[in-house]
Image (cartoon, rainbow, N blue to C red; front, side):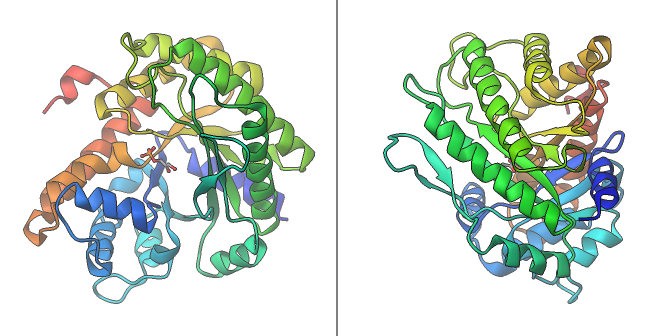
Length: 341
Ligand code: 13P
């Protein structure tokens, strides 16, 4: 394991002003995204859409790296150039989602476990040859009256640490993603409690499995009210509770946090990220607090594109705009009113 290279890559992914584009939708997820704009999920459409994002001029001022899906890392663009080369030529670092999605956890109704550890070492070595420099694995935690259970949290944390250790062995920076779903009407206090318990267990497992904290990134949810809660906490409260929670459980050696957007509306997720970055210097938060958004970077360009070649320019502008606003929020200089177009 080349520790120095891991540390350098992790730091580059959370370089000043920059964060990550999550473009690693699985076949099922990209089909749902395309369904929402009435576009068929053919291989050609998937390539055209993703190539358009990756070629966006100047977007590497805001986007450090892109997480790809297994299919995408092997594909070529319209002129035959590999999509990975298009990305690197445009100044971004290629990464790869390596989990194989979730299945029901036996003996635990309403809880999930993530699959994909069998054969992972070989897959990682292949991804290195295909140009990947970092990896992602997503564990899913559901908040309800009866979940998560300590059992559910522990299997997710164990798998995340197995994945992270194997990634670092292969020279790849792991992005450890324990996603706490926003679904439900729970309070922000409940989100805090579950986030604290989950991250505590994740970092316990990462330590046991000898993961180099300096050479990884954490991709968590923000501490927020449930999506259907009657009273949803304001960005200032989200910032306060998110950082307070992290201070309890997130070691300072981890260079950065790259939040997921989780289906939260663009406005809200951008304001929350902005509030977090406004508060961070005042409370000596030791980590970069950045983003690894899927929906919040892609919703606008996807809608503008609608599968039509004549919309490529408008969609590119929409993607660039979302990336620049998200970068502003990552620096704590986002102005919601000024950005309204
Ligand atoms: P969202 O930002 O849409 O939640 O996607 C991020 C991601 O990579 C989820 O695994």
